[in-house]
Length: 364
Image (cartoon, rainbow, N blue to C red):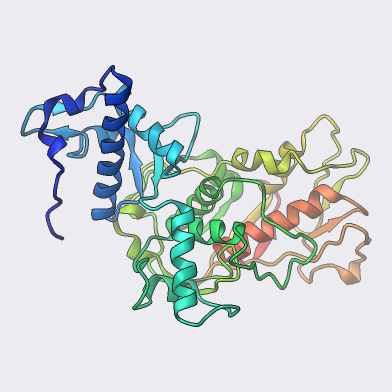
């Protein structure tokens, strides 16, 4: 990798102190924003830990003995957030963010221009082609940026979601691309270290990992849109996959779940190897779904993760003959919460992560 060319301001001591004059400060922050984006782009860096970054060459010039204070680092990052170039993985903690050296809209335009120049309009294109195509400037981009690109391109109407199996729902959960990606990626990386675990372990634990990634290709069916990605080798993630503190927080989707309506007179049943009922009307929708998640066991296969859930229609009663062959899950008539949850679970597992087999087990 060629050596990064620092701008002249980097060797100017006052550059590391936020200036009080508003006009001067605006120019200073603009210079810092350009520096952060250029530095991350040069290093192919797609995320930034605030504590680590403060001690890195980006914010610490050892040659002149100057270091940008932590408060000033947050000022720069907040300016980048306003520009749409970063999003916090946890807006409350603000200790780590995704870096987009091009905004999602800019990536969307690049994808659209590439598709148009290659005569691929109105066709199904694989994400692999986007990442590895000879004529695309997004070559080698990490999955994070691809997810955001695809999402934003979809939102802009230039990429039509292809979803042959989920006709009952006509859109994505109402979350930002960063929030969707964070929950999705954390689950995927977690599974690199836990081939067989319950979802509550994913939600509640904070494991430390030196690998955190799969060592093989596996299927990502759909990847949040009609852009198909048949194979993805997680070993290519390199340093980005070496996570130390990862968690999948269902509260990320609270805004979506809060929109779900439920009938307190209804209940869900888990049958087969284990059973329980969600009858307590004081439980919120989110608590009910979290409870259900703790009962679902994920099984890993050698070369892919997969899942199986029965079809659940909100207006139908499923008889024993109509149940999934595994006999794992049944729902009462019009139980819309679980019906919406089934779609949500299918979306996050099938179209994002690539599971195909899920088995309900009795809690030990």
